[in-house]
Length: 465
Image 1: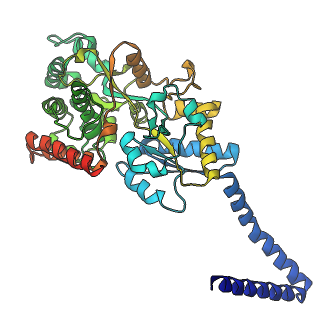
Image 2 (image 1 turned 45 degrees about the vertical axis):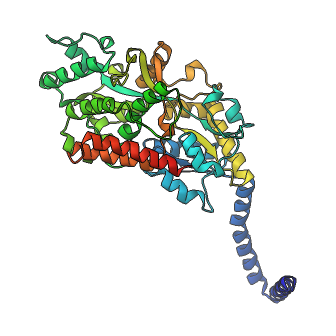
């Protein structure tokens, strides 16, 4: 039956072709020429589409809104140089998983996307191409940084290493150290939570003399903007719990360093530029602007924050005064603690897209890590500390926070690893952030916050099994 239908359709198509041919033969010469011209015009886009399909194209779904403009510039430059189309779409803050979920199943799916580590790989492993034999992986300076599957394949390659901690304005700190009765006379004397707390509270009491509105910038708890606390700050107590138990992941988190988290979080919100009850309206850009304008002395963020500081109109903080210190929470041995260093930025190539798109995508990322132009974009435009053997010592970022990051990595301190890549889900982090906001608003006790963390961790871990 199916063969008969196909045969009938072919017959109709042949008859239609013959009729069209007869019509053309009886056409006036001028009309015939005009029709031919229109046909040629119609064929041009088709040829371009066919050529694009053969050579492939790149669609990168970007994770970080703060570097969208830079990625658009890179995409344009690469297309101008190679002729290969590159599209960059940037998900809004806190929506990446949702956007990826809707885009990955479409006809025009991302060819290059990001995962945050092993948990992200478990969610998207059906779309992750094995990168073992690619130049991208072969040029990775530390192969242990890659995300691997149970089959030994390589499915995610980090494209940057980053650090975060407490960024401070050294000019304000030096002004404080020169005051009578200052708790310490140098940042080097701050090596524990107790000392940090004493310094911060004394500075807050003297904020008018220091010319600041508060020691810390506002603790942004606007939904989608709270990742610095429910992910980055939360990483530290989880790091120490993992360390105590000799594990790299847990199905059930006890949150044994709950009080330590509370202590540093309280220090942030009670010695800030604004009241705790106003933090639900604050975004990361607000807090970075407060630091850039000299309204505070400290802010928790990462080395990527330099662009957010230097880009603020009226910025008064000079490069030489932008420094890092570790985030102390009162854990044993923290005097030897460095910055929180690692990555949750792993490139994955879509295994479900065409071979042409896969090749085009791998060519694009290889250009980024191997060509002079690409490496310049990686280092000087994106501010990446790219972990590839193709980058020399003179090709490291030169902004002040990057320099501080490398200084801590090389000074013998023990970096705090990024364990938040094992956090069970975005829902867990969102619920943690919401609980922190309720705590700041006086609607939840700390015990209730801690219970939310423990309960939601276990529930979300179980859901991934």
